[in-house]
Every structure is written in C-alpha cells, then in structure tokens.
Length: 95
Image (tube, rainbow, N blue to C red; front, side, top):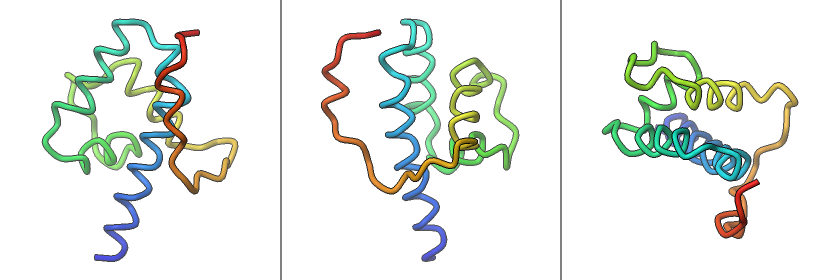
C-alpha cells in the first residue's frame, strides 16, 4: 500500500509540474486534448501507466499531448521533482 501511495504522489506531482511547464505553450487544440486526457479516464492509474509506457495508450488518447507527457515522465535531465509548483503560473499570459 505504501508503494502504491508513493506512486500516486509521484504521478500527481509530475502532472502538476507538467502542467506548469507546458500549459502556457499549448495551442487551444492541445489544451482541449489535455483537458480530455485528465478528465475522461476514470482512473488516474491509467494515465500513469500510459505516461510511463507500462501499458499501451488507447488510440483516443494517443496524440501529441500524450507524447509530451511521456517525454516529461522520462525526466531525461534528472530534475529533482520533490514538491508541487506554486500556482501563480495559472495566471500568466500564454507564451
């Protein structure tokens, strides 16, 4: 159970950091795809498994936003992702 809770925390932390890094650069189409991705699946575990490539992504969610999320999840720069971002980024103008 502890491991499961830790994985959920990592997923939630990563998704908020992904949003901070990417939302203001997304087109309207990408924002709609992202909104659909985070709101339609009934289980956050599904998104976690798709983003980490542990399970295949259903065709309906296989798009450029999922590709961005997968790349972010790989954390190629080995960034320390230890806390959720502050929320002021939500009020910034799009880039």
